[in-house]
Length: 505
Image 1: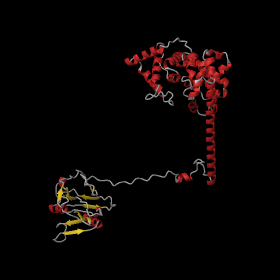
Image 2: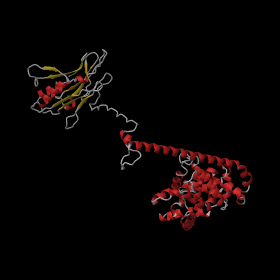
Image 3: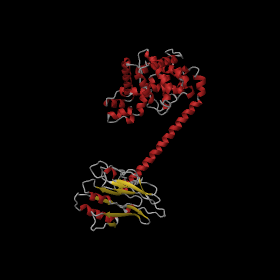
Image 4: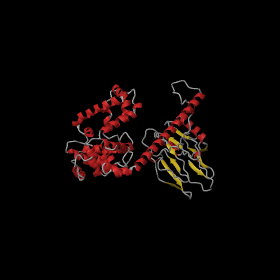
């Protein structure tokens, strides 16, 4: 019986009736958990008429958590006296005792297990009230319809907790696994960092010396990289200062008539150094010209046609999807063309839709990569002004061939042959290396010319390159491509063809 006695805590009492007593009188035995396990083991191996097996295990845990498990056979084939003897047996483990230092000790409920009753009414809970009377909560816990005898887990009750309505097993709290140290492991301390694992190990002193040499080389490399970065920064600042100092020449000499740069080598060299930012829009518009004789209202007309097509569902869905995909990869480092929060996203999309409508009359569709050119133009000028510049810039023969449909395939092949000839004359080693790996200009040149190098060069370098393209025309695109190959020449002699293609792309 589970009882709480003042000053003694929970006591375990085992009452045996006539079926298990040696004499006529009942015995009341009070013992420890070890004695209870020994006595129940003896009872388990003693043969009976019904082969009733009883297992009671009391595990001594810590004072904060204690769980006692009582396993009873679900068999009901025994006699009534045997069932009564089991019904009168109540176990109160002393290991579940919760000692309190105050006089007001908590009141623990009593769990009564009567195996003589039907399975749905075998277990009941009796709680003693403050005045000493016992009150039953009337709760009966039916045994689960499982062929195996269920394990009955009694959680430890405290003064601030009550017996739960379910007798489900409560897992013990698991201790948290200690975190590993952030320092080097034993293996990392002994493994060599300066020799591969398939070679014989070095001497410890030699390994330390080589590791120190490696750290010194890395330090010198970082210092050289920082020095190079500072030199590039100084050159950029000097170039910007030189452009700002020459702005009065641009405003007084070049801006009234930009064709003067073709007659004066000094002004032409000044143009090659870069156009001032605030004059770039007007200079690009004049240098690109208006061979198509487009009016300022042409952009609004094409945009209104595109919006009507979008609202009526006539605009091709695959073209609109290609525009969205092209915008996502357009100058991602600037974040101004992002579909969700980009400031110029809608302007770029409108410009591309208007450009598609303007080419629809010629039977031409959308070409991936045009969004880079439209984005570069929108950064420097407004959408109506940029639409006229983009239409006239892409109307030049070379770019029109690359942005045209399959009808211009022969023209593109002719430009490939021209570039191959220029490469063989200027850089024969690279030319023969490409021939050895069977790499033609068609493998890398479209990726450079269609976005006008915006995917391969820094933004400021592309701005200066565009300044010269506006002045010199399409021929400068091939010169720029040869210059890129000249910069990459030390890295163009890979033994594998795929590595070479990855570098060029």
